[in-house]
Image (cartoon, rainbow, N blue to C red; front, side):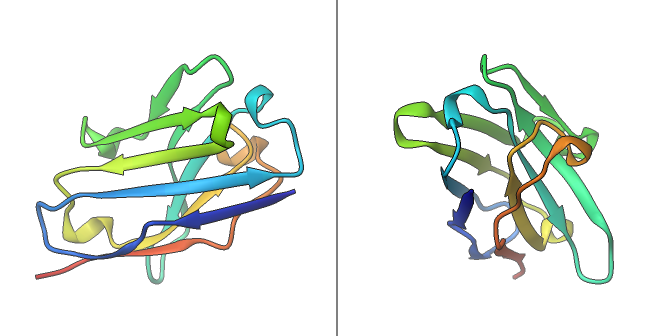
Length: 116
């Protein structure tokens, strides 16, 4: 199993980014996928998940700013983040479960820095 994230970077407050996670080594279309993040000095925080039917769920702090989606033909899950805030600064990880507790594989992470 391999999960490879990309798309992170430096963005100003109010800006947008789209993260991608490409998966291999398992049947992607049958698997729920999720994103979590870890800010400096803090624990891992679940961000969003999408099941195999495309049903989505989000952390309360997202408040309509983030959208998770998947392209089964490309074995890729996306996290589109709009209206980014300084407090969204973190390393973002994708995983092969809907939530943190049911994920067994994680990517290496991609850094998102929101700063003016």
